[in-house]
Amino acid sequence: MRVFISHNAKDKETARLLAGLFADRGISFWFDEYEIKPGESITGGIGKGIEECDVFLLMWSAAAKASKWVDTEMRAAIRKRVDQTSFRLIPLMLDDTLLPALVADYRGFVLQRADDLGNIVREICPEEAEIDVIVRHQQRFLELVAKQYPEGDEVRDLICPVCASRNLSALVKHEPMVDERLYVVRCADCGWQQQAKGDCPWVQVRPFESDLGAATATGFLFVANPIENSLIRGTLHVLGLEDVSFEARMTGPSLRINVLNVTVAISFDPIRCAFTGSAARAGAAPPVPETITMLP
View (cartoon, rainbow, N blue to C red):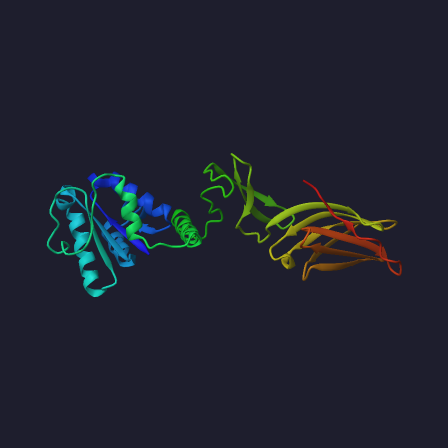
């Protein structure tokens, strides 16, 4: 359900209260100051808004009666109502100004005090389970994100998902291990951060070191989701042999790397969310896997 809020600028404060109440219930709505950006066509935005809405809420007052914009919106809504009987046209009388004859036959509401707005919104909106309201809130949030940022923008965070703060900053760093840019969004209030979408598909870059018995491994884990897309790059310090660089992509939950005469096995435990590894010379019994230590 999507509600078009038709109003005159002199009734803007009441319209804002209505928009907030619809938002609280997770109801999508069209409100001019949220929908029409500077430089965009007003008539085009209004026409598109009415076309996409299921409910036309006409806030009627002396100011609305004198407004050509409200009259234009009202006539467009009446034409849609003629073509689509499921389209709802609801007048909301803010004062004693008589309704136009074309909409006087539609059942509406009389606003006597601001406290009545909550009851009016509840009557307009269907009763739904709390989870359905939450789903609509999320859908509305995604709509706002899409309007705020271009589709190709790497950083599209409006608020912190932990503390709801808007005090976010975006860092761009170059990761030489993959020769790509990494975008990190961080909340200055609670410290939450995560890597944003960018040129690099890795979810997280984590340095590691591990004593594998027959070898010592150091390097970076480029941990992706799903884990099978992860990449491991590093150096094996094999006892008695020269250091060897290695690179391998996870094609499953585990991988094996053969370096000279040493076999290194690395696997991921999804329950513990930890990588483990072991190394052994050819023909020797495999050692007990050691947990790979992630560095901060």
